Image (cartoon, rainbow, N blue to C red; front, top):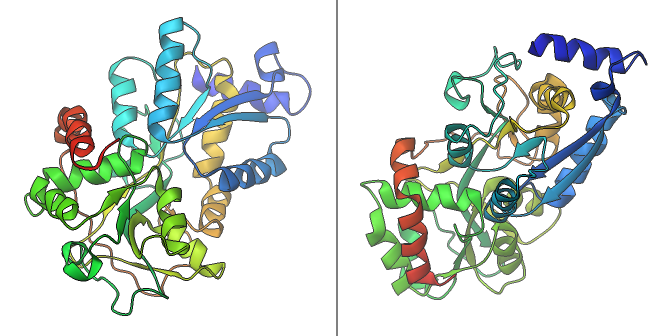
Length: 326
């Protein structure tokens, strides 16, 4: 059935398609930074000008709040969801909200970043580490433990898991991991660390000198450094947390044909190469590393079993809000 739909989409580009494929409108809900999102759509349309992409963009939590309200009203809008947190996708899958796409071209990818039933697919590897202002910090932090040190008292800012999907996975992982737990976040709070909104607010605070140090996804820091901002990024010695920015088709999608074409492009060599050009680590093995990254990076991933993260999610957000507000 899905192959039949894809064939119909290809016919659409030749001007002899059924009604659904002739309608080339695609609604995307996403947490991608808006400037990178607009660039991505422009490049996608160079290959697929027949598909007009509209979007709603915000932090993952706000994206999901909007979508849940639409579910309640019986009128969900998006065809494709592209957000930071795979736990969100797992919840939607369990609720029957996603349309499996097992024919997605994932053969060359690590199966660990793909849903085994094809309900969602990982598109990138985004890690969370430490950004610092190079004009304010003479001895850069090299570990998570450094952020609780007196030399960074009242200088640390982090994104809130109440807004950011990447932050939710990061805080959920760190607090559930035996090496950190809530003791680590209580130590951050005791050292005067504060919570911003999303990763963008952290970058702005550190780049402008409001805070000397921040917790952030790596590509934002490296992109800002490449553009001349006085920041640099450290991969902490204990390891980093990681997200895969999964994409999925909603079971209520009005244009699943265009949705499949969009996901195919995200996973294609061209799509992955463009991800690297935007500063993301591509998920496709062998794809180029972003030019903004250091020459040699060995990533040690801090991970926790996904079921634990899902079970702890709401309590984690309440505990974080009690410590840092929100």
